[in-house]
Length: 207
Image 1 (tube, rainbow, N blue to C red):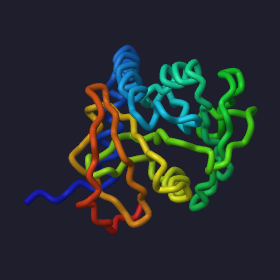
Image 2: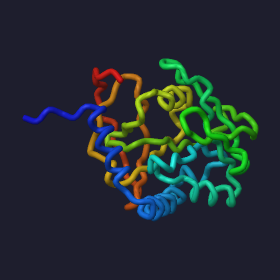
Image 3: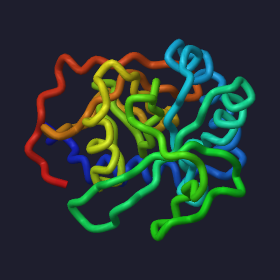
Image 4: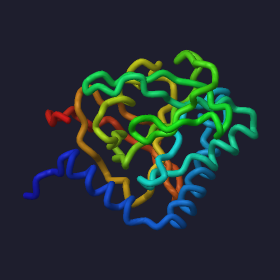
C-alpha cells in the first residue's frame, strides 16, 4: 500500500505545477477563476473583502482582475501587511487597498499597502486565502509559515473563506494539523468546488 503524501511532498508538487505554467496560461486561467469568484454569493454580498496581491514570479493565481472588478462595484478591498518576519511569530495587520501606487514590496517580495486605513477584523465580510493548492477536504497547502492560519483563527467562523487555485493544484485531500483552519470553497478555472471537512482528522506532521 502506498503511503500518503506528506504536506511537504504535496507542496513541492503544487509548486512544480504552477512554475511549469507560462505567463499567458496563468493570465488566462486567472481571469476564468476571477469570473467564477465574482459570482460567489459570499463575494456578491460582501462590503469588505480581504484578499492577497499576487506574487507574479511564483505564478500565484492573479487576483488583480478580481480586485479591479470588485473595486469598480464599490467593494472595499483589504490586503495583509506582515508585521513580524521572525519564525514562530506569524503576525499581520490589514489595510485598505487604495491604489497600485500605494504598494511596496516587503522583505519577502510580497506587495503590501503602505497607505490606506487599518481595517478591523470585525469589518471583514469574506476572505480570499492564498494557497499553493488545496484539497477537497477543505484544507490548503501554503508555504508553511502559519500566517493565514493564525489570521483565520481570529475571525468569526461565519466569515466565508475562499481559496483560488488552478485545477492542477487541487487534490481529493491534503493532510492537516490541529492548528490548520479549513476553507469553505475552492474556486478553479473550471468552476466552484464544494469542500467537505467531515473526514479531515488532524495529522501529526510538524511544519
